[in-house]
Image (cartoon, rainbow, N blue to C red):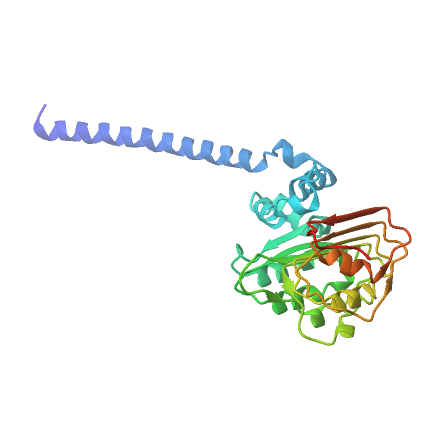
Length: 299
C-alpha cells in the first residue's frame, strides 16, 4: 500500500470513529433530557401532603408548641425564612398562611441588623389575626424605641400578648407611653421591662385606658414613681394578675385603686408595703412579697 492509500484508510477510519462517537453523544443527550424531565415531574412525598397538613407541621416548627412557654419559644421569623427558601411550594404555602406570622413574634434588636424593616415586612403577613409580640430593644437605642413602637402601633387593634423589654444597661431607655395605640381591644397580657417613664404629670399615664381585655400586667425594673404606677392601674380595673419588680421611686400618691378581680399579686423589695396601702383587692388569692428588708413593714 502506498503512503497516499494508507493516509486515505486512516482518514476513513477516523471518520467512522467520529460518526460512532457522535451517535453515542446524541444518544446520551436524549437520555439526559429524559432523566431531567423525569426529575422535574417527580413529586417528593412531602410535597404530596395536603396544604392543611403542611401548614400544621409548619406551625409546630415556628411556634414551638410542644412544651415551650411564650417566653422561651424559638425565633419564628428565622424558621420562616428557612422554610421559604426550600422550594417554590413551601414558599407559596408559608407566605400565604397568616397563622404562621402572628404567634410569638420574637425580635431581638441587638441581633437583627434592621429590626424595623423586618417588622414592617413580616407583620402584614399576619393579616387580621391577633398578634403575640416579644421585642427586646438594643441597649444603644438603635433603632429607637420610638421607631419600633410606631411600627407596632399600626397593628394596635391586633395586640394580644405583648412583651417589650430592653437589656440592662447603665442608661435606661425611655418608654414612649404617648406612642402606644389609643385602642387595644384584644390585649390580654402586657409586660414592660427595664424602662423609664418620661417625666410627665402622674395622672397622664393612661396608655392602657382602652384595653378592656387586659388581665395580666407585669412591670419589671421600671424607673417610675408610685403615683405613675397607680395612674396606670387606674385604667386596668379588670386585672387578674399583677407583678411588680421595679426600681420605683418611693413617693406618696393621692390615688387609691380598687382591683375587684385581681387574684394574683407579686411584688419585690420594700416597694410592696408602699403599693399595698393604695390597693383594695377583695378577690386576692395569692400574694407574694419578695426580698423585703428587715425594716419593711405593712400597715
